[in-house]
Image (cartoon, rainbow, N blue to C red):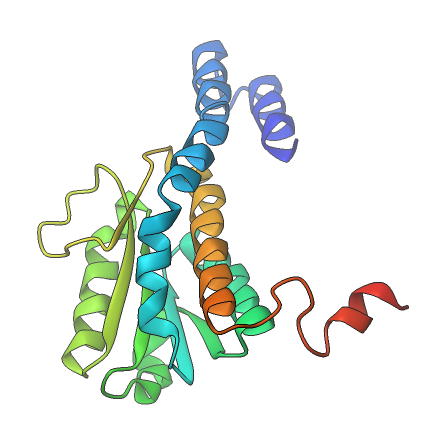
Length: 197
């Protein structure tokens, strides 16, 4: 709904012309198919989740619009799998947070923003050089010859990639929790919070 309001406002203010508005809305209409594509490949995500089952700490790194998507992903992983998880804006890694990366620390890297790709790849290399195990979620079509994606996300406009990315990350959290034998629908300490004021 907010995207549609944005498109209409951009048209009325002259920021978009008719063709740009149609293109924006057409891209928005691709989101359900992108989500369905991820759901059809949920077994790939289930396979990736196995590397997180014994983790005590997990970090997530992303730039631009990937960062808020990872904040949601990190929260979900904490809520239902009880693994300490933090999302970091990749550009802030050198300002202290990289000190938390130790050998075999699982780091989930999200790479969907084309203009920020080279910088994100550089950040991935930095955590790998410190022994981190990186699980990468990469938008299809990005030229990432330096990175072999662990999971390829559907190709949408960068502005809309947060939605399929969050779906993939929530599936990852779901499978970690379920395979640990936890009740995904009733996280400890949280059930009362969401049912009682």
